[in-house]
Amino acid sequence: MRVLLLGGTWFLGKAVAADALARGWAVTTFTRGCSGPPPAGAVAVTGDRTSRRDLAALAEHGRWDAVVDTSASELAPRDVLAGARLLEPLAGTYVYVSTVNVYRGWPNEPLEDHSELLEAPADADADFGRLPPGWTGPDWYYGRQKAGAERAVRHAFGDGRSVILRPGVILGPDEYVGRLPWWLARAARGGTILGPGTPDRRIQPADVRDVASFALDRASAAEGGSFNITALGDETFGDFLNACVEVTGGRGVVEWVPDRLLLDAGVKQWTELPLWRTSAGVWAVDSSAARAAGLSTRPIRETVLDTWGWMESGGRPVAHPRWDEHGISPDVEAGLLTAARLASTQAGRASGG
Image 1 (spheres, one colour):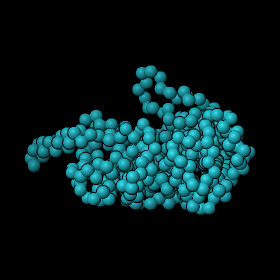
Image 2 (cartoon, rainbow, N blue to C red):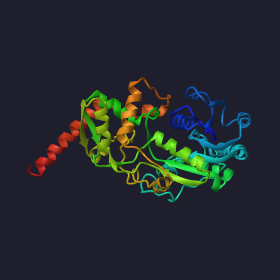
Image 3 (tube, rainbow, N blue to C red):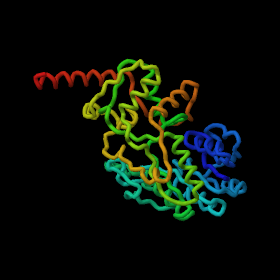
């Protein structure tokens, strides 16, 4: 099997490359050379996906059985379209890693593989979907850009040769966003740890290695389709934080603070307390189609343990601005915990407790 990876040196792309090489596949990577060394054993081609000249140079290395695209998160649909058109004569299947953000109902409604998508043309530029000044409605910019990119892939390769993967949250070793690493660092510090909301909130993050494996399985299947990719949702935020405490040495104790208090305090959902979000659909994404096609996801504890092992061994993520968006300071955490205890005491007195 000959596979071209658009990406291949960080997080999901790195996991895809490692898995493909372990399968004995012939791997070509195409990157800008800014996010780390190419994987040993791969043919590494350096170039910019927005450059026609660089794309033409890449084409000289074809032909491939499949393309796996993990690096288009910041590309406009028209750039994805240009690359897909050039690669179409040289590849069998195009696997495009999209996102659940392409759904109109995200994150407020439960989602299925056939939920309504946002609208965007295949040749949209980077300004398509930007919010006008003063806009107070939902921010669908990123989702529209990715929806346009999905359409671009299908326009070039057709439905039968296009595989669209729509992950929710991806965690695991080499994570560059900083969600799980922040919680692990916080747990390692010990003391009283603020648990957001309730411990029984169901969550669905998928391990990066499981997403990579499924992407390659669909590449080798040589048939089209679109798939949501999430864990089953049978584990909870409590399971997640308990695992973080356990693998880092058990020095912390989680104290749960109600959603309402956090919201009233202005804590930013999704970032200041990573993975905490109260929207009804955020952890209600159905991935039964992917499971029927072979998706398997490991327990959250395994993801937590292996990520901590990566951090302890000196692993460093690719530098990314999103890392700094995550987490709260110890002083803010302590203040929220104090406020929650006071509110609980006052509620107990009011009820005669």
